[in-house]
Amino acid sequence: MDIQINTDRNTDGRERVAEYVRGIVEEAVGHFSNEVTRVEVHLGDENGARPGPDDKRCMMEARIAKRQPVAVTHHGASMNEAIDGAAGKLKRSLEHQLYKRREHRP
Image (cartoon, rainbow, N blue to C red):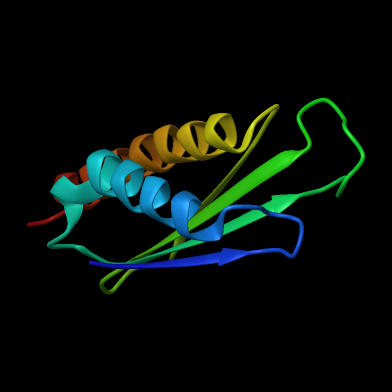
């Protein structure tokens, strides 16, 4: 499973954030690695230097072999909160999608 991380120009600590993201994604969806080919992560600070509630955004998109991609977004007060929230949503979405797939197999 390939993990691709994209950040906007307002996101600080790209290397540290990338390490954290890889660990969280592996923990959340690593057990789907046989079916998930790639996870794209997009991180952004919607207000830039101005503070604001829940202005950190994390969007994750999982590419599943022979299926439509699954995408989720989570906003948080901190980047870690946004990443953790998106990873949890992605895990639940993949469980749902792949469970449905197994239910419909002959």
